[in-house]
Image (cartoon, rainbow, N blue to C red; front, side, top):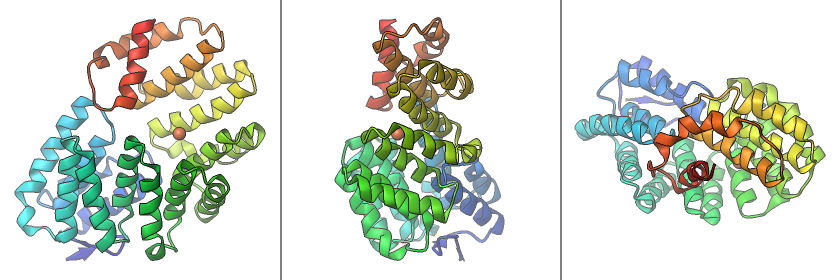
Length: 318
Ligand SMILES: [Fe+2]
C-alpha cells in the first residue's frame, strides 16, 4: 500500500494514480486551476476508492445539478470496490455519499471522525469547513481547524483554514495574523488571501485591503477560475466602498464577467452579487444584467445550494 503526500495510506498500487491524488490535494488546498487532475487518478487506477471519491468531490464542489450527477457515477464506482478500502477511505465514502444526499450533518460527522483518527488529512478538513460554512456553523469551522493544528504545524494550508475559521468567529486580529503567516509560508496560498480579505473588509480597511490583494493577485492567474472571480469580487468591494465606481466596473468587465466561464454557477454568482451592489448604490450598469440573464434562466429551479439560489432569483427581478 502506498502513502500520499499527507503521509496517509492509499489503497492503490499505481504510482501514477498516487501522483494524481497528490496533485488533487495540492490543487484543492491551494484552490488551483487543475483540480480535474483527480480524474487522471481514476484513469490510472479505476478501482481505487480514494481516486473515485476525490473525482466525486471535484464535481460536487462545482455545485450544479449536472455536476452532482457526474459525482454519483464516481461514488458508485467507489462503492463497488469498498471491500479493498482502508478505514479512512471508508469514512470518506460515507461522507461523500452524505454530501450527494444533501445530508450535511452526516457528512460533517464523518469528516470529524476522519479528523479524529487521521488529523493529517487536510482535504477532509477543507471539505468539512465547506459544509460548516454552508450551515452557518462558524464555531465548527474553527473547531475542526484547531483540532488538527497540532498534527500540521509544518503545513502552510492549515493556517489558511485556521484564519478563515477565526475570521468567521470574528476573532479578526488572530485571523489576519494566521492568514498573513500562511501566505509568508506559501505565497500562492489563495485560501489564506481570501481569509485576510474578509478581515480587512469587515474592518473597513479599504486601503489595506486593496494593498493586500494587489500584493498577491499575480498568484491568482493559476487559481480555480471561480475563486479567481471571487478574489477579484472582494477586491472590487473595497473600491466600491471607496466609491471608485469606474474601478469596480473595470474589475467586473476584466476579471469577473469578462473572464467568466459564462455557464459556471459560482462565477455567475460573483457577477450577480457585484451588479446588485452597484445597482443598490444607484449606478447605471448598462446592459450587464441582460448579458447574464440568458445564462441564468436554466438555473432558476436548480436548488443545489440556497446561497446560490438566492443569487439566481435576483435575475427574475430584472
Ligand atoms: Fe469571500
